[in-house]
Length: 154
Image 1 (cartoon, rainbow, N blue to C red):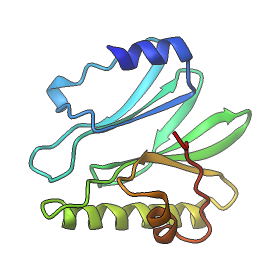
Image 2 (image 1 turned 90 degrees about the vertical axis):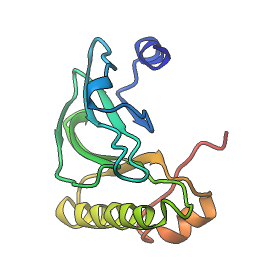
Image 3 (image 1 turned 180 degrees about the vertical axis):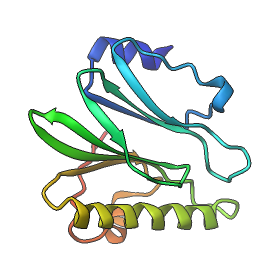
């Protein structure tokens, strides 16, 4: 598996995957030295293509409540020495007629989570990553003003 090989070779602290398209009975991404939190693909929900977060075993994490199948929020301990942080993985479905309502629901849930965490955990850094299926100017317009966008220009 290319993903497992990459993780084994590079040893990232956190690795987020979107659109793995695997249903519960198909999930086999097991990387030595890593824990996995996953939400399976669900063909009954438009745009629910499966997401996961892998973290090194030296990190501890607690999954935070979220019913949306396209979002995994974690509170991660000891990523930055003794400091906790919030990490959110999102897959936002492509904007088309079939996914439009689902996309709106997912985006609303994502922004509400960020705002909730900003209030509930004011001293913790919040990191969000994923596949937003939008260009940077649109993302900057849609995110609450307090959030900084850092992306890879490649």
